[in-house]
Image (cartoon, rainbow, N blue to C red; front, top):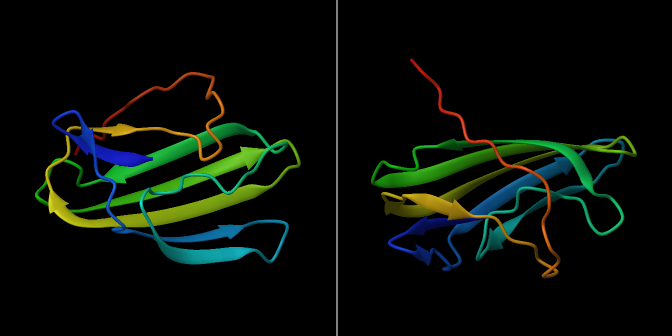
Length: 112
């Protein structure tokens, strides 16, 4: 997932992430050119996923938390911070392998 503004993705290495995966001892940390929302690789397709994006429109760092459940069942939890103080107007979902992403996306907002 990449944050987006003015029809352009934010591609700098400013996405700092941490992840854990249930049913294993896997954990990951690092910096990347995109924010990871899933730990699952080919053969372990997500059946359900929830992604919460915090502060995307504020000219401040954007935070994301995602959870996913596979058929194994395995639960993955990822969080990341995009460390660029920009007001974003959208996001791009993409596959690391270039595979086609199928399914549906629903966008909801929280009301105070």
